[in-house]
Image 1 (cartoon, helix red, strand yellow):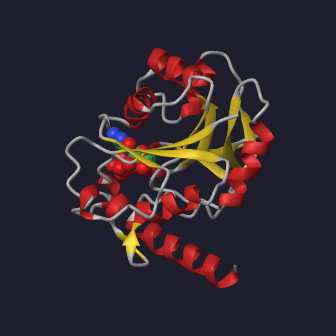
Image 2 (cartoon, helix red, strand yellow):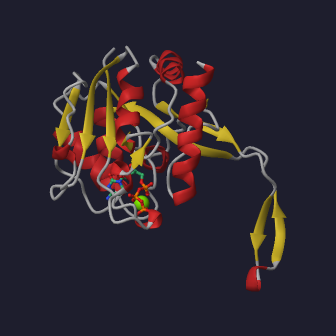
Length: 229
Ligand code: CTP
Ligand code: MG
């Protein structure tokens, strides 16, 4: 069983509203993506970490990444997350049967132990699966002028996170077949093919940094992880 991580990091971070793409914003004295790569590097089952950056990335080379010995940089990012993932999967020098763990660069608070547990749970699975958490809040559907139209049941609803773990060849086939606005994660491409990926319990700490306040939250989570072990 071979596992590799694929880290899409070719986004512009438009919702963050900063001049620099969010993966390079400062988080506790390091670029945000450093924490993501540090967490993945602490997963012993992961043999290689492939980072997908855009061809025009002006930031990556200004940092020293030599401490990460299993890193491979792929300068083939696309115009959407799915395209970056597909390009990266195709460029990665790995076998089709290898497990790809696709993990957003923008999720720096990942717990390496959770990834090892995920790999242990899914390594003999026919399809693969994703980290996710059950929806906790009551859900409202908005009607006209943001008046509540109704309350939606949260029964059986989960929020998808990453990593998402699928076999490289199968994932390439699924994304290539269904790439488009509906494919916002890897599992959705497999679902279109009729597969039912496994939901694996994730963690509320595994946030995706999207808006400026998320950067502060990530700093608190990472600081807390250091303080609390
Ligand atoms: N991503 C990518 N290629 C793209 C778009 C996104 O590799 N064309 C990556 C981002 O760098 C990020 C992950 O996919 O690590 C999740 O995407 P998201 O949080 O949406 O990041 P951005 O697209 O950069 O942010 P925004 O949508 O606010 O512009
Ligand atoms: Mg985006």
